[in-house]
Length: 138
Image 1 (cartoon, helix red, strand yellow):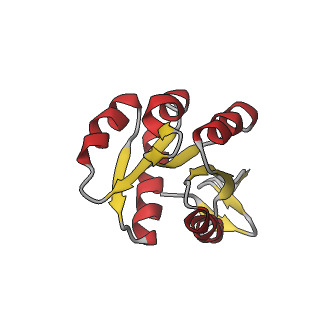
Image 2: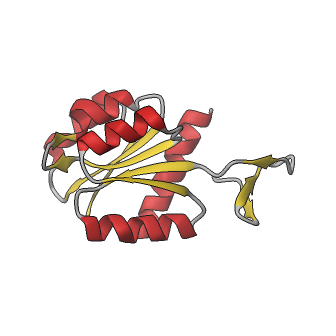
């Protein structure tokens, strides 16, 4: 579970201030990317956005990111080919079109800890991200 949120920062169980969890959202549908960013920011995440593999790789190089939420099929390739391997030390949640199980195994092999099918509920995204954060936090 995410630590308790108070006043824009997360507090751990010892009540010491810690930074918000930074989430990179990689989605080529710009409308969906905007909706996800708004929803996840309201849920307490610090958000970084990318719309293609190149911008995601750049963000991973320049920013300290805790989690990656990524679409699998992007116009410039599959996220499991380049992005997920670069982010394998992070909690990675992958999203693919409903019924597209062909991408699940390569995504898991590249380091994804969870896999959601579109369409998904936003509550499922939060649950998957919490599980991914727990998997890398110990």
